[in-house]
Amino acid sequence: MSAFTRRNFIGKTAVAIGSFAALQKVIGAGHPTDPGPANPALDGQNPDSIWPPSTDSKSLVQNFKYPFSYANKRTYEGGWSREVTVRELPVSKTLAGVNMRLTPGGCRELHWHTAGEWAIMLYGTARITAIDLDGKSFVADVKKNDLWFFPSGNPHSIQGLNPDGCEFMLVFDDGEFSESETVLLSDAMAHLPSEVLAKNFGVREQAFQNVPKEELFILQADVPGGLEADQKAAAGARGKSPKDFAFRTMEMPPTMQTKGGEVRIVDSSNFKVSTTAMAMVTVHPGGMRELHWHPNADEWQYFITGKGRMTVVATGNKARTMDFQEGDVGYVQKSLLHYVENTGDTDLVFLEIFKADRFQDLSFSEWLAHTPPELVMAHLHIDKATYDTIPKNGAVITPLS
Ligand code: MN
Ligand code: MN
Figure 1: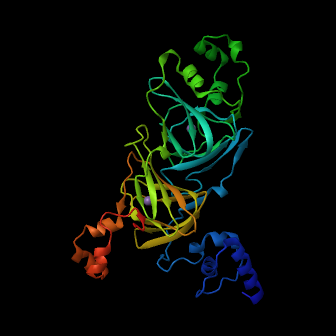
Figure 2: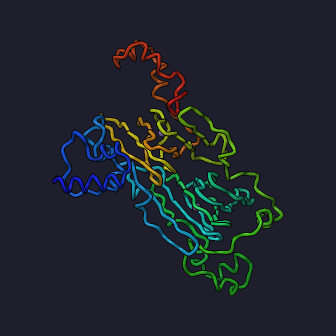
Figure 3: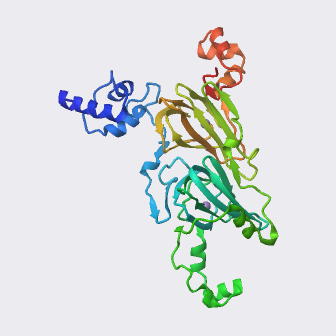
């Protein structure tokens, strides 16, 4: 790189990434130069790909990051939708994510699908509807950080409320899932002979003459009225469903809290209808989600805020480190060792999602602390004082205190 282009590159990169330490990492002090074409903004977001830590293997672990920024939006008057499935992120075989925005009154059309739908509200407020297996109705209002779960085949809808609608993340327990491959009310009606509809609903054929011929997917409707009135009208003489398809995450205390951060675990032990497990993790600056693995399921991650990096240690002497920020999806296959370190100067908040009834993890430090000390010391060439310092009860998030 000539002095001029190098200075130009450093200048642009410094603007893109902000800190001198991060800049040094991107320009790769001690590495051969990188004089060819470069994208400083993207390089600045991915310092551990540009110059990986020397502990990464030279043989690659399959990509495990996909930013929602790359996902193509489908836009409608009432909102938009974009998705990251196995098509975008081939490693993500068990789970797929759909990010959706609805205006006030904007409605994700009444529909159902073969995958189970887990969701978290990211912004605003929404009204959700479903019915249970006894045909009893469920209508509820949800706000930021609330969850819902609609089991496979359960028909449902989502509608934005005042003042500014909502945005949420849907996670489906099938990597092949696509939000554009669902059974919609409008589709179903458009593909049935009108005499069949008349017989089915006991009305005149002409009653359905204005049914839309095309799918609606997201439609703009009026903002619904009071919740109680909707609940009562939907329940009718049959009464409301005793099942709660929603979960209010912030009404429970953190499952675990350390000096480094906190975690809220929500699975079928506290959210009965859900067959998808979640850990919502907050890591303070300088903290780290400790080294661990999950014996029962792959982990789908969504980064809500902050910056972090993760190394995945795979089988066959392989490891890869990638950087993550707001809006990124990450993925870790079942039983592979990993950590998530806060590399920013604000809280890092991310979700760990599993296609499993229960959240399960094994802590690297807990394992070593509960194995005969001499055996561990013979492997790692560490002294007894170091061994004794290893946390005995796992850390979840470091530092403990
Ligand atoms: Mn759905
Ligand atoms: Mn994990």
